[in-house]
Image 1: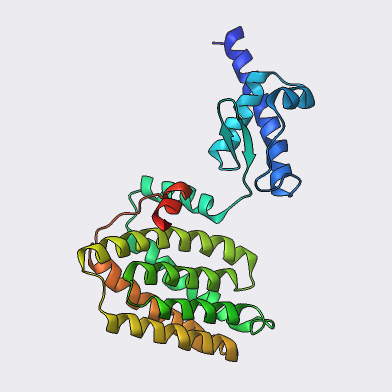
Image 2: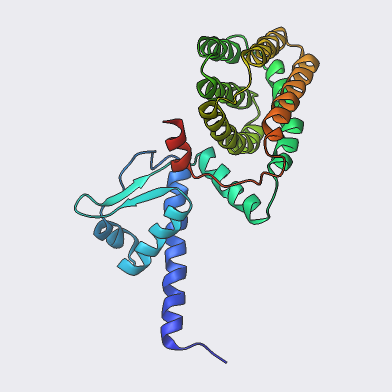
Length: 266
């Protein structure tokens, strides 16, 4: 049984929209359209691509779903460009894991294997003492200054782990592990804020232990001791995760959108 003219028209419009979305996506990924740029008005894009307004709007919807543009409605409308971000990747990954009812412990196990590899990679970087190590020490100092504020302490600690992954020197590991780290940190910050509000956040002694491990880890990276850096990272992650997940061992992964993550930070 064939499809009718109307169905063929819609299918053709969809294919045209995908071609337009492909081209705009390429320009965003390759930096021809920068983060924060405003796309030309829709009538300009229609003329530029030689497509219908329906096809153009469908293309923008595709890109909006991917987090590469946000379409503003009203008198000040337009489409704002967003460079690919790990928060968006983490959100899509979170949706996949949430749909499969994956427990948070599963994510934690993956990070226990992968993040120590990043720590070892970081210790091998020839420029680590000029780039990564000063940034990690600066974050540690900020953690120490906020050690009495549980939620803030955890948030800054998340930045330490994020910086460690980003500074490992391997772009693929940074993208993959960084997305997992973002997903994990979103849950961890949520737990920290609620625990602090209830007066159930870990005691100051435990925070000092965590800080001590952070300092030792940076020392190992600075010394280029890959095996010690890997072991310290693994031990630290296991201890942190055991305490965090002890509150709810059956907790499932929930996808947190970039907007939700931003609200939690503020």
